[in-house]
Length: 69
Image (cartoon, rainbow, N blue to C red; front, side, top):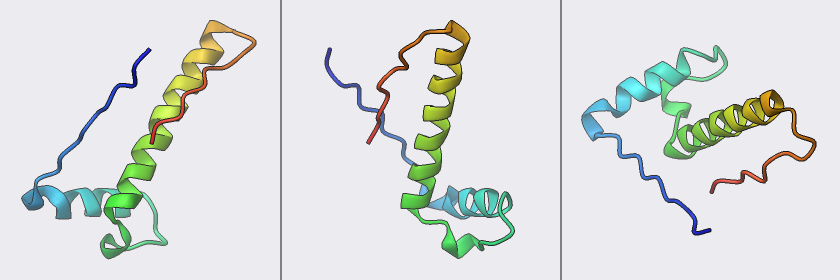
């Protein structure tokens, strides 16, 4: 099975909103601490969590080897 690539583009005009939104969820960071790498990491973490919950609901013994980059 071939890999699927998902590309997300955040317009420059919206970047400060994305930074503020993520910063508001953690009192230890400011908007300037939220980089593209931080956003990517948070999105990947969320995807892994969703897949993990799906696997648990299916009650399988072996979990998916979901590993986005």
